[in-house]
Amino acid sequence: MAVVSLLNQAPYRRTYSSRERLNVDTLDGSDPWLSHHSGSDRHQYPHSSSQHAGGSHFHRSPRRNFPPRRRCVTQEGELLPLLHTCQLSTCERITINVSGKYFETWRKTLEDHPDTLLGDPERRVQYYDKHKDEYFFDRHRPTFDAIFEYYLYGGGLKRPPQVPDDVFLSELDFFEIERNVVEDYRRGEGYISDSVVLPERGFKRRVWMLMEYPETSIYAYIIAIISVIVTVASIALFCVETLPGMESKHCVQGQEPNWVDPFFITETICTTWFTLEVFVRLLACPSKIAYFKDFKNLVDITAVVPYYVTLFNVLSTMTCDSAKSSASLAFLRVFRLIRIFKLTKHSAGLQVLILTFKASVEGLCLFLVALTVCILVFSSAVYFAEMGIPGSQIHSIPDGFWWAIITMTTVGYGEVVPVGPLGKLIGMMCAVSGVLTLSIPVPIITENFNKFYSHKTGRGRI
Image 1: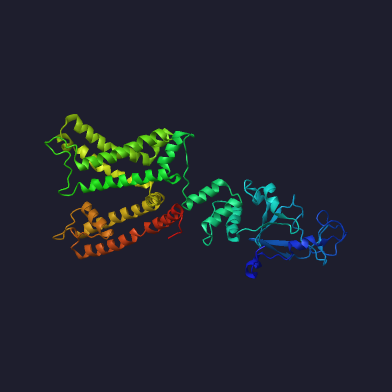
Image 2: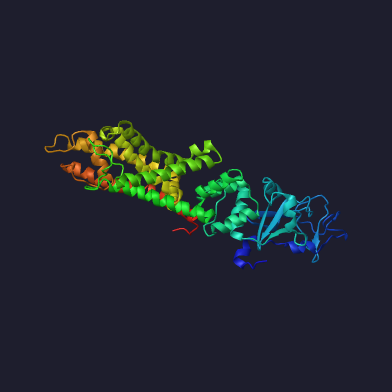
């Protein structure tokens, strides 16, 4: 048993220890656990109890006349309080010793959670110490404080700040806390539970593991590396071909398509790889419906659509005129940038960012509401403050919208400014309010990022 300091043990010390209950004798010599002395007792002062969190303290009550009862006494002749029936099968109050720290509660409190270790009499009996009339657990005491509060008050689990996550989860697993309660705690702490669904054993299962789980084999890891390289090359190509003098010569208006243009060949290779990925994963996936519901798969499909639409348009006419003049096709070229989201499958950092913003939606909505209110107030105020002033640059409340958002975000382009003294005073108030408003989502996003980062990457909090 762990050694407990006097300061720690004092709140849980009882006047009569469990060990004394073993060394007792009744006045008639019978078994103290099964019978109590009857008749006139030389001790006429029954005891009452006051229960505290984690333990109990007993004191004597004023003298009263009680009917004759059989009671237990110690070897020193002191009368023990009749708080227990002193039998494991019928005792209604339970003492729990966690590494020297005592907790007492009613049996019903524990058995309100029958699926847990303490709530099931058959499972907890293995930890019962009949010599001390208590349940002993050589476990982590600070963690059990939170578990004991869960038994008393219900609700969710709250990890004490000084307890590491892995220790807390280990203790929850030992005491067999309900699975749904633990899952709620894990979600609140930022743990991500990925449900792994695999195809039936065979060739499809091996192919799916190669395409979906890079950590399972060296071949799967190589495929993931190739996918990342091709994705980065495709995004870089999209940006480079917009530089002056670096435009793609594949399709020049008024001329026939140039099929040997380096930009076109590189784009064709990248799109071929993406197309191969889409079809292989579609054929090997365990569920076609789940495949099309996954956002990452929709990104893969969308990433190859612009290339084939443009290619079909060029092949149908064998000219570049329609490809260059179509605004919709020009938009599809910009749509190729969605391929950057393919990196989320292989980057824990990008996954953490997405999860952070998803978890911070409520805080971001609060920020947007506060920002919108401030913009409406200050744009209206500066409009009426600048009304009638010669040289005023704010001619309407919508003009004030632009000025207010630029001022509140501390960008300050300077093309729209108030010129009157009252307008400048409102501008100062708007700038200060913007700084305070922008600080609303910062702690929310930071807290969520720390949680997801620590659990997703397996590192400590930053």
